[in-house]
Length: 78
Image (cartoon, rainbow, N blue to C red):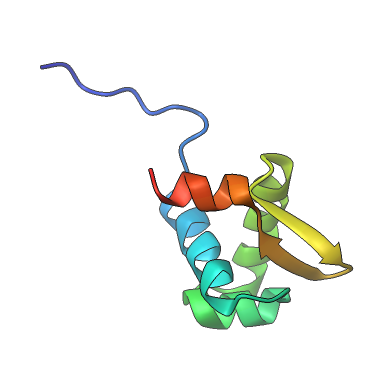
């Protein structure tokens, strides 16, 4: 049995924590709220959100507020 190569689409633990936090919050949330819910530092959340948005896992329906997308929810179920 071979080792599974990590895909570039796989999420790191911090990204997973952010998506889980957003999924639990259920409404558009700012970086501070996401940080509090995920247990991560606000600057770390801010940086990770950029990558998650680029991948289509989160979107910003209101300036400075984020929600997890259906793509992001599907990624969490993997």
